[in-house]
Image: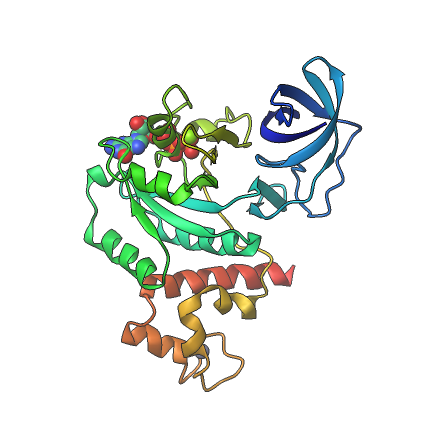
Length: 303
Ligand SMILES: Nc1nc2c(ncn2[C@@H]2O[C@H](COP(=O)(O)OP(=O)(O)OP(=O)(O)O)[C@@H](O)[C@H]2O)c(=O)[nH]1
Ligand SMILES: [Mg+2]
Ligand SMILES: [Zn+2]
């Protein structure tokens, strides 16, 4: 039997079979072959082959090849955590305010999505709480770079239709910090969904956070969405430090003009990137984020 993984908790996976029935499945044997260096062999959206072990129970035998994957590096486990797979788009969700707007978090999601081969867009939720000038400034910069940025309020309903239009019958994962409104948005869009909302991140700190497995949801208008538990951080991994600029599209052209080659674009004289920052072609905050991530990657490379 073939089916799709919708959710998982304590290594029991909820699977929708191609026969349109639902199954509770465990993995047969100890491990599922995973050549991708991730600690979770299955993620929402995975297609699996399983054998029946009861009327609505099964044993997963193998995972079918993935079209793409969106993963984040798990610092504690020192491995990739695959967030969701077989996606049409990643929606990086942040809040305009409360919890604070986190543009650098978004920049990292943009990189992680590109690494996984998944198109990405940005959603700034809670616009009903006001959009400060510095927030708007950063949004405009993403737009200038060609990224699609949506603005929404789950409170007033503003912008929610744009999310549906963007998803367009495909599979979309909502990914972002805790408390930005991912589940509230989905509850509002999908009557009767009843995703838990309002759980504040401190609860996770106290260890009540039992699973970090997302949930695949069939959208009544077609296609699917994946709600994911909020994360505190997203690390950039798997990129050589000197390759990092290729993941910041607006750095590419200026970096060709650097006098020193290779140039780290930190403090070298006559650096095209630094000149572009001064001239406004590269946003200062994006540049500082680049420096931060570059430091992290170099630190990592030393180990
Ligand atoms: N003012 C305002 N509050 C919102 C909005 N969207 C969500 N909230 C509130 O923000 C809180 C957190 O919302 P959740 O939907 O639980 O956030 P989440 O992103 O799912 O959080 P995690 O599941 O922890 O990752 C709830 O109290 C919501 O009522 C919004 O657009 N405006
Ligand atoms: Mg939630
Ligand atoms: Zn340079």
